[in-house]
Image 1 (tube, rainbow, N blue to C red):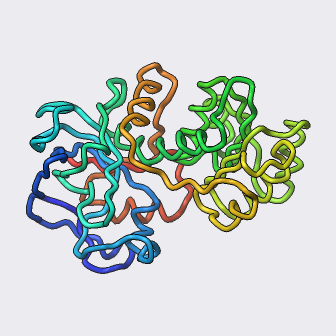
Image 2: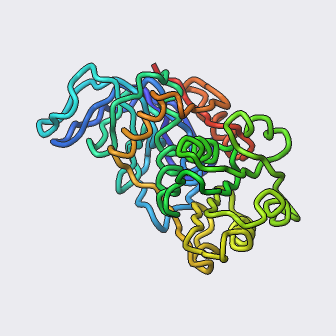
Length: 311
């Protein structure tokens, strides 16, 4: 099968397309013919070796944790899916070697759910990691909840745009930070946009004089510090971050490291099929152009998701 492989740590220039052996299918595994694979910042961060102290990497490795595709074969212990089923998933394992930038991926059952019928392959592949991150970080701060006000940092990004929609669907008011060029986009999602940068806390207070009920940091920098200033009663337990481990720990908040979860994927799929959740695609590229996808991802200016089409 064709796959993108990396033989040593490095940047996009180290990615190559190659013929590799098809993976074995374990007792609780599902072999998926990949139609599309989502690209996430964690992919190139692993490639750069930034997570070497945390994740065991076996070279050469195939990058990628997000996929959408069709079940090709199931392991003997799998009864939940059958060949021909359309699925999507966040196929993270306990080590890095066999990712989703490939024509076929053998992944654990626990990482999959049925693909939302309303999403095409590209949008389905862009949802799992970012959607689960948004869903689980909102849960960490007590859930969005009708009547609550939630501050979302980097609200126009892949994770932020999904968190915004999930919160709005639950009846929450969302204040989202973004550059001015993305303000109309945020309004289309139901959020009230504010420009990030110096004076952000004052701009948030102007919109929410009594403070916000929760804050989600998807960008780093001073986002946690600003959140601490504007969350009601300075309650750090209502702040979650996916990037600032030290800052959110000092604030008394939550560092969120997303977990594969079939039930959460199913819940996200239901929101999509109810018309409450849309995956915004910044760029769609063929598998062979994975290096270009990584270059775009490293710039950090995408609106929504970057996705590779495979078959």
